[in-house]
Length: 255
Image 1 (cartoon, one colour):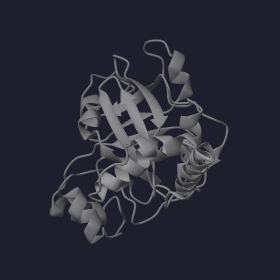
Image 2 (tube, rainbow, N blue to C red):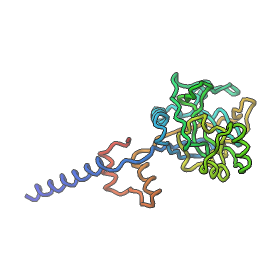
Image 3 (cartoon, rainbow, N blue to C red):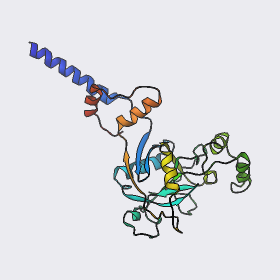
């Protein structure tokens, strides 16, 4: 009789854990950890650009970016990587043409712009502004004055006005405003801006390739890791207890 009661209690507890794992709220965003020779960054991918988000997740999960180089670096502008040819490149080799044989349709939106710390998709000069399937850049940029933004509006932006949000960002943390409307921005760094600054100041050759290789490795955060980041952002404690760990054993790490 006692054994039967214990069995029922265990089954009930297991059922509650399974229920908790199955019906736990999914994280709002996907996050990618970027490890480089100059430090680490945590990237949040935008849901507003689902084609770029899903493609980037697919490549990260496949290990596509591991051991690739930041092959194009321009101080006060951006650091670029994602060319698979860079994995085995010799010193001084020209890079920037490699990648999967497909493009991502443009997802350019006014509300997603090139403030410092955002990630954008590189592309060639195709008229549809379709993105490279793998090459990306992380924005360093610089801080602008109001007068400088006024000048950009009448010049390179051909009369298109910056929004209040753009002006607030570009006159405080900075960025590369002249790229707005021409390239898809699909995420932003949660931390790691100093890492981008450190990469941006390395010495480069005439092709803007660093003289000393700067490698990257990427990994996708699990559902629990992402959920805890969002809990902390909301002022809540992360869930790391015993029962949470048991529940996670019965739940997929992906979402």
